[in-house]
Image (cartoon, rainbow, N blue to C red; front, side, top):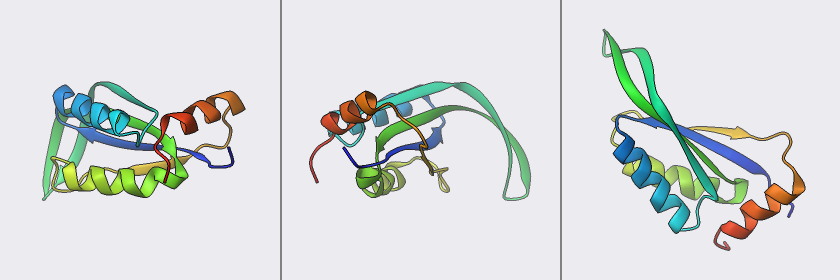
Length: 108
């Protein structure tokens, strides 16, 4: 497996949204695993107003070859006006785990 492992991260305002995303991405073989963390507390400025919000962080484990499809799906199905969609390249991953990730994903 020569493809690189990436983690795509986003946040949403409910555990239901996070679970729905995870189920879609894994069942459609776009992600090998999706981890949901939360609730987390976010503080940010939006349209000139200081806001605090409870959110759930979603970490999507996939391969670089699938990242564009995952981020496009996430952007078009997100419930925020301006969603956080961040992609991390993984510097090291055990070969067995990387092979498992690749086996879970649909061929492109």
